[in-house]
Length: 78
Image 1 (cartoon, rainbow, N blue to C red):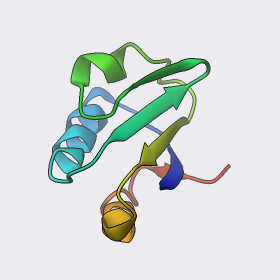
Image 2: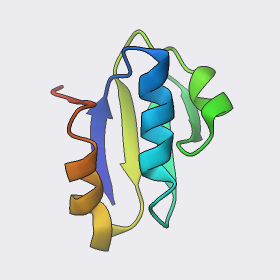
Image 3: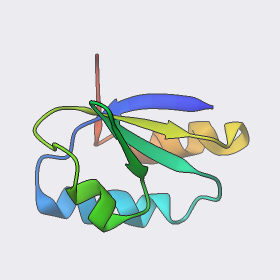
């Protein structure tokens, strides 16, 4: 299981993120505060507070490094 913090600065970032995530099998969860949503759900993502970094957790260890590589534009340090 891999986790990174991401930031979505504009609406198009949400669409780009979902397009990347749907290309990967396995579960992707996004957490903001006490809320957790499916990372492949545009409506779920818009229900989160996007002003702060969001924790992304990916369940497939085999492809985690590939996913993280594609998520580099969104990843922020803690």
